[in-house]
Image (cartoon, rainbow over all chains, first blue to last red; front, side, top):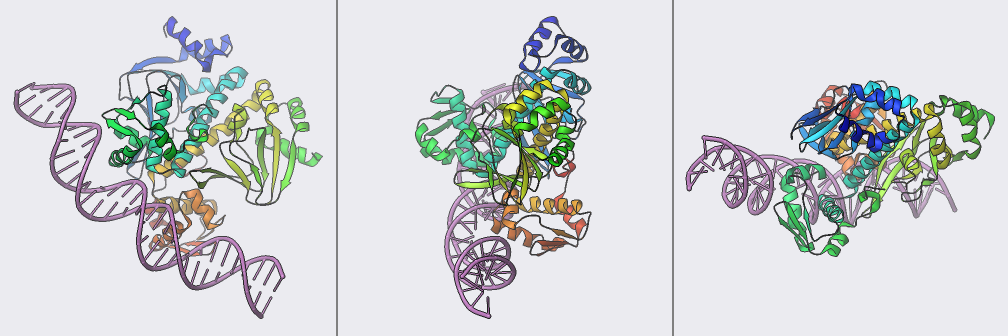
Length: 232
Length: 232
DNA sequence: ACTGCCGCTTGATAAATGTCAAGCCTTGAG
DNA sequence: CTCAAGGCTTGACATTTATCAAGCGGCAGT
């Protein structure tokens, strides 16, 4: 790995607190690699030989079953994905595919499991990442079980709106079929959900969406921090 | 806490590996308490002041929203619930209610967060529990997004069948409306799902269910270890 | 510029799921 | 024993969501 990359990795929250000697041990066996868009990094069912960390870009986590496929989440910098599989020395439960050209840090699982036992600060960083991931999944389940498709879309748009600084226009970060899959519906149903939201001030033009009646939309969506706030 | 209880707690996987001195520090501030059935132990949105561990009995974890309610999981001995909230010093994302008379060990969150930094073995135990919980939630999401209600019920029955030692008869562990909520459907829909499974050898008599054509049921349910095996 | 592909939308229809209401059966209290 | 309450089931119906098919429109490659 190049010196400047090493320095950048060392600055990541996951590695900033660990002991220097352990960082020295971890890195030589690791790779920081660039991937183009659309590369499958991991496949569900395979043993978790490496911990993957998104340093740059974005990775879609998705799963298969019953002849269907569904997106579960999108991992952004800087977060580890499939950390739980690595720590349990188990197989991946999800597949991972780059959504954009990305830089991925790959660390041998074995090293992670060794050092986590010896470095409390590193263990603490791993615990934080795991806890964050767990809570994200709980929110995902609540979103799926308590809301209809239209409600999920409305809340998703409101979240984009918040993240964009409450501008009137938000830009959908992915293709619509990807958003449909993330929200647990078919692309056709997403189109119809957008149509349903028109009276609530949602105007779609390709990847751009205007939210002209945010208050009305909120009354419909009933956002709650216990589902929609990524920082809680 | 009584001496024999202390001993039992010390033997739990979560505490068996930690240093004796840290165990001594943890316990005095903790309670091991009996609760009757139906007691609300924690409420979503409240700050996570205590880590709760089910020592005996069972606890339903459920969530509210949009005027609806849904069961997310059931915690059995010996597992911690809401561990992530404690570690992040955040609010609970789920409510917890005893399903049976239960013994619950309550440990101040503050102590957990302190000792996890000092005791690598304890941190490791926490990491294991967190990783297990995370993977459970991933499987829950896959179950919800990839399967229909009938398929979820079929797989649930097959799991009970496995757990019971592949006997022809399985006993539903909860009231049907609770199972319906866990599986993400209404009680009415659960009744109809049972009826749909009749041609696949599923005969219901109150809480007892006969599985007379397990192979047929499996062909319908298509169980996969990546969703249905709790130990993977 | 043409053209084929692909993502998206729309319509028609089907399937899945939820809602409301009624009735059955068990259970527990009086 | 009687009876009320609650859990469960069933029927009728409404709503939500998926499926299938067609067509639109932008975009990349020839």
